Image (cartoon, rainbow, N blue to C red; front, top):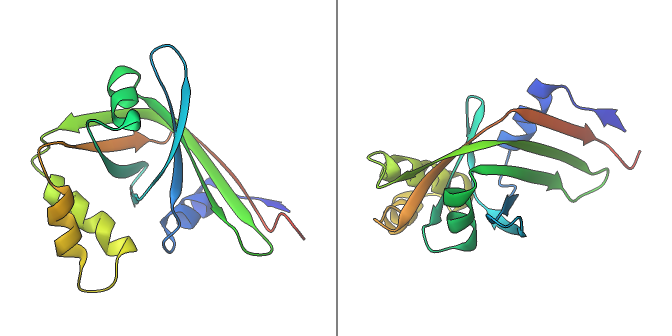
Length: 141
């Protein structure tokens, strides 16, 4: 097992099509975890969610989150980040970000389709500013 340096952990987050597991809390503190697609933008993770989802409601009321990402193949790696989340309703650049996120996860040539599908008035643009990042690689060696 090797502790990842912050730069290595950021590269891990940006690599491939790993889905993040986003943890949020309601105003009363009830936890919630949901899978998300995201992209790395500097020291932030950018993702979208519908305003009516549990995570969307939680983030509007309590804008802090943690995100876990792992590689589930031997020898196994993981990264966890946490920080404040800026949530923007009707973001003017929502289509751009929804398309960039889709480019990471959908088959080639379909990102515009998915970006348009997700760039609707009910969708929130979210930016998790990474305040803390930890990770380990090759945990099974």
